[in-house]
Image 1 (cartoon, rainbow, N blue to C red):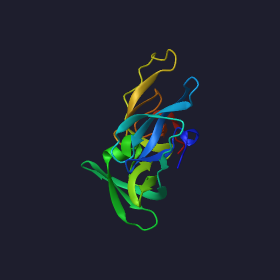
Image 2: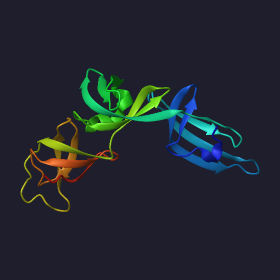
Image 3: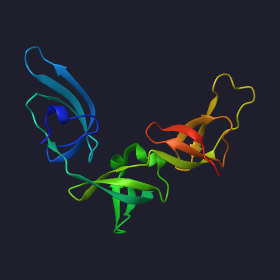
Image 4: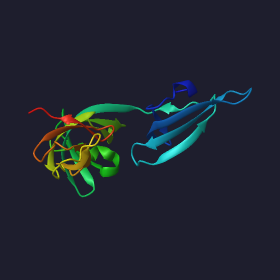
Length: 187
């Protein structure tokens, strides 16, 4: 059981028998009384977000999550399909459980799978991925005041702002936490 001081940003807790990750956390002192903590938690299965106020003596159960490695295969309909790296069993997750990570997944991308009670509930994509540019409008000559950018389309269908020198066929590195261009990949 976790007490109020152990609940931090990123902690995974069990609430109503489902895993939730703490996405926001603020502690406050209440006069002569104890402290309280206002947290926002996101359900790893449904994506539902809750806001809770925890008193100083309240305890929450820590979710029993295990991590395994898997490879992304493909997306069909509303589901993304993966293959476990050890057992080679295939499984699928709904797009909501994959979240924004779907923007960075191409065939063969390795991911970390979060399992709750031995059932896959969510995936974590690598912090940086290398993707190919499939659409890139030409840079306008003379349009270089400051740091000029243009919108490019990647092989996954995701669009991102990149410098004017990026062209179709280039490979770029994308930060999956921010969704921003990092650099042109070296060949």
